[in-house]
Length: 114
Image (cartoon, rainbow, N blue to C red):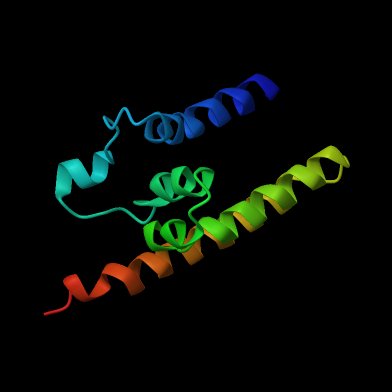
């Protein structure tokens, strides 16, 4: 179980590393296939921009980058204290996912309305 978590973390960080290094070959597969950005589009760019300490640029890339950092910090702290439960992680993850979809609709929803 722990090995799977480490693998998931490495795979999640890979796009940010690619952007920070300036390799530029990462592109959202949903955007590439449909032409419509997914709810997470811009999150990796926002994380890479944050690593360059461009806070306004990170907000422009994806406003949910800051709540994500808070959530990851909360999970990390709870994990280190031995208090993070599966149920808590699932609930807060679902709330974050729902908020991300709502943010996506606010940002791009007008493109779907006629």
